[in-house]
Image 1 (cartoon, helix red, strand yellow):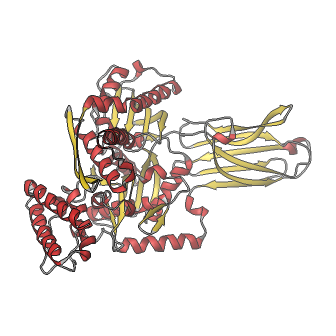
Image 2 (tube, helix red, strand yellow; image 1 turned 180 degrees about the horizontal axis):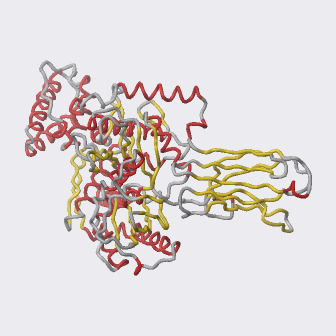
Image 3 (cartoon, one colour; image 1 turned 90 degrees about the vertical axis):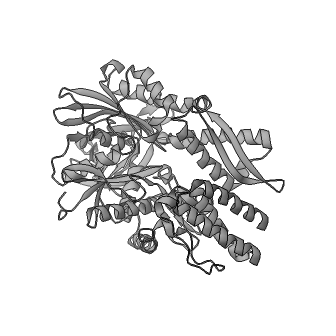
Length: 599
């Protein structure tokens, strides 16, 4: 990439982790931070209202769940708000904080202010969720050049050896969503034939299934309810996530958490062994749901398992042995490891971004409409009156861009107007679909040809839906454009949101290194603290959370306890800096004891 050009980066805005990539000198590359190639999709506020993102925000999740937000992607497109400290934010605003951090990482790596991006979404995201993602990008200061589907993006970095036509299944099992796409590769063209998915199925669900199992064991064996203690719940949930990851390589593991919570005034330590078979039994129903989606995707494009030439795995959850085993059984073939499951989506988005810039770096992409779009209409009369149903205009799995029109008739002569209600979904019953918008078309009231109304839908590559209704006999015409959730807000609302986010961005960890999260201003400190590297701090998230908790309590310590804390803190930071895990473990236990007795 020429630094003088306006870079279009590719962003995988994930539920659990996010990543940013770009094409540099003809090669597509992940743009890493000091923590590695991915950024945890976690946002938090420190007690002094500093915005933190990524690893350091994830580190404080268990200690300060009320000041931290994770897995916000699952709420995209909803009307809900989430609390971050004493403030409330919408899902697009939280996502904008993650995107802003990725933008900073990319700008530093490329040596220029990055302002353009291709952002990926699950293939089964509906129009509202896609527009919420676009809104998040714009709030982060990005021009969103295109929204593309995650499985589709992954195919752009998949390079089969054969130049012949190939059909591949892209199985994308991430942290919060699942998608499968059937794709045809031929003569430099990538064409999506069908997509299926579940936007509420991912690694988070597997973590929670294991958490519920462990919580029930604690209830039976220790007579405690972890769900009644917010901090204990988040700590145990994180421990279960790590246990799940370890079980991808080991047959068994131990979930060990010291001083998880109190029981009868005493610290409760957790030490529970979990084997892979137990995990498999817990998550098998979720894996079977993904297989059902695979079967539906094949049926939609009239293909069989035997016609699939390759199976590409995307998403961290595909590393789970049960997933790979079940896919081998279903497809009767070994899944391909041709692409990195964690990075393929961001890399593919970067390829698409480079193509938008005019660089010849990959195949031509033909994506599809993932949800049917249509209108409300009367389809007949019954004894009870008009039968009002959802009538499709653009059907799912049509190639993008898509355009189609349908002719309707007014209900009666001399009708003066019609209300056009635009829906997205797959069901005849209106209430089972999502309402995208409405508008009115005034009519020249008369009979004959004047009863005819033509509705035209146009869906562009960037996800803009244009709906036009016209009365051909009179020339009357009206249209609705659904292209950005921001347009539904007033100008003053947009300015207020942008101003609030910019204030947070100005105080964010874009400019404050994560190693400074351990405060240096304790009232009882009289010496310069050792500051471990950010990379070393990231290895000990539990210790960072514990130190922050102790810092918050330090003003209430008696002098003797305060002196002990200062000493322990300095020794701990020194041990972290030297990466002495044994000493860190020993000193952490001492700090936990201190906090127990001063509480």
